[in-house]
Image (cartoon, rainbow, N blue to C red; front, side, top):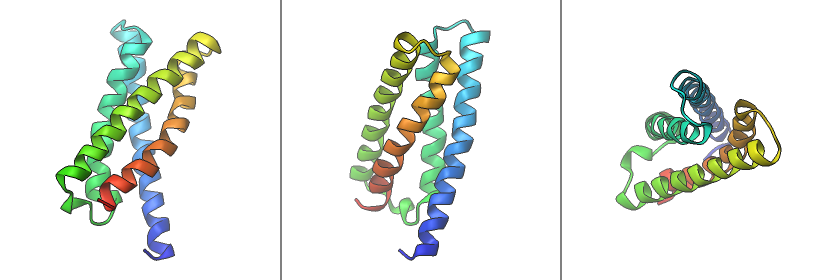
Amino acid sequence: MGRGRNLLEIFRFLLAGGSCLLLELGALYTLTEAAGLHYMYSAALAFTLSVIVNYLMCRYWVFQGARQQSAKAAAIFIGSSLAGLGLNQLCMWLFVELAGLWYMAAKLLAAAVVTVWNYVLKRYALTSV
């Protein structure tokens, strides 16, 4: 992959991720404040929604060659997303319960951690397998 193509891919990944983060933050806040769910349940539901939208964006727009995805690649993508959900929930709990942060601030920190995880594993899942 050429340098320009790689930079475009990273830009698209960040744009897709940023859009999904906004979706996730909105869902987290709405589910917690308007629906009255505990922040951990809201975080899991919002994360899941975001992953579904992000998957579609990554598969059809971000990564070249992703449309020819194999069942093995899909399994890796889903597995990495489940691990990302676990990492998200762990970060949320640590940042809120142990560090005493507001759940929305904790989500921003958790998103930074999970973003690195997502790029590395999902790029592999969508382009290498």
